[in-house]
Length: 337
Image (cartoon, rainbow, N blue to C red; front, top):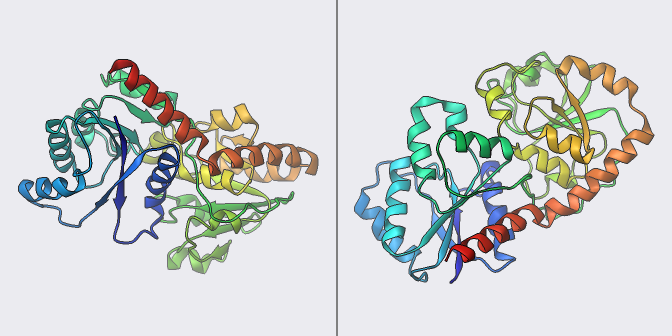
């Protein structure tokens, strides 16, 4: 039996949202999985016959009994994904998945049943954390579920030697609906954002702006201080982003770990448990807590957290969590064969 991983090739692999999937491919192939290169098209209403015809070439090297790792969501739509699964099942392939994003947590009822129906068809799935596993089990996804814990993060440059500083870094979407807290950011707090903010944010001059950088080298640029893991407003609410961060592991956390930066996170985020367990930074209830926290920091406490972040950096840069989950899945499948 051979193991394969879908390598979704986008038109522009510079895009940040592609990086988690590319990293899974890198770390999976390092332990013997093989790539199934697959171009993602913008043909939203591609006929079923065309999809199946393309799969003939994609799956030519596979044999019945092989295992294929899907990276979900594909962002091609659930109807498209159902066709792909059906074609592969007909060929006798074993379909498993790693979940990068649960769209139903953000988007609600309109995608809930299609997403759950899709996930129930896999022989095993890998999810972010225990909360996500429990949520899926509550929604009758009764396939074996393996917990990842932390997304790994490949980088082609070494992490800087991080030093104590009362400064913050923020990477990720700078869209007003995703990071509204930036619109009222106090210039008293030393913050650098990475990306392309809109003109309104640029005019504020409340923080430094670093232009977009390819994700593989970004960990080598963030120097000193803390990474800020935050979505939503100053005090996250029970809205789309509040619900979402309670369940998912944000990729920016993995970026900061790859950089060896301690972090500051919202107390209700799922990833807060990892931060506390490994002593990787601070957990706060609101961004209004930041001034007092930063004022009480000491170089000694920072050095301790930074040493822990450096140890985590070694793990995420080398694919520890991805490979552990995949090896667990391989053992599970072989026991059930």
